[in-house]
Length: 352
Image 1 (cartoon, helix red, strand yellow):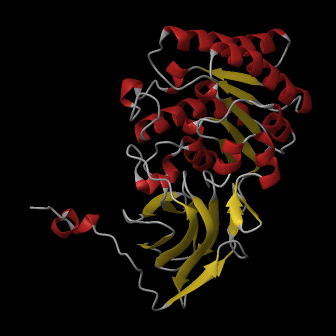
Image 2 (cartoon, one colour):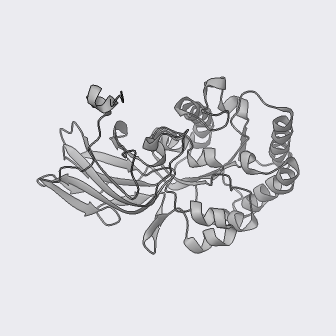
């Protein structure tokens, strides 16, 4: 006999169609909403201009539409928040919760309040509602999916509720993260559990996620794009995507030098793959990455920092992944903890 868990436990039940009675819906790409981490380029949310992504490689061109790091912020006193998301594609993988790869989640005054979770059969539309205990005007942040594409997002609030612009981030120049599927957010159970989102909440800072699953190889085109971005910190991690040690050795320090030349005072954090126990090849990769760091120090660089995989996974150890590669929520929390220590050094005493 088939067991329907949603009938046994109501906490697993999902509404297929939301109740729109008494709700007003707004296009999240227009004021008073503020969009961060993604841009609207000819009808799609994406992480960089389409022309730039296309110039790097076909994989980056496709992954550019994955909305990792996208957020919409606003203020309201509504007791309910609904969304209708029209999706260009949805990321369904056996080891990745749909709530992270396809779903949105919601924070009220920087505190997690609920998730907009897709149904198993989702193909192109997500409709969901989260109820909040809102006793006044609160700031709401809705995080976009990590591994799916969003063409349009409508946000619904109660008809009689107030809606207004959210405050800017305390640190407005974004942190830019470049790297692999781990950087993109695989396999966090929801978008707000990616390590970038955790850091953003901790320091009240904007960020841009340039993690490209299986496709971050430090090509000249992507490095040229990154080096010209306005940013407060750059976090550099593509170890997993470099096909071999020879490629890593040929590209890693070269890319660092290019970004440093354009940004002489920019704090740069260099990371190796987040893994506690390393194979022989992984240790060789670590040495290549660390050499970039030590060479920078020897040249007098005062704004470079280094975190190896063991430090990144200190809290999680070997409990921090779903497949010995992609972090689970504990793994992402462990990475965020290690980075928090460095960001405190970077931002300490600085007027941001």
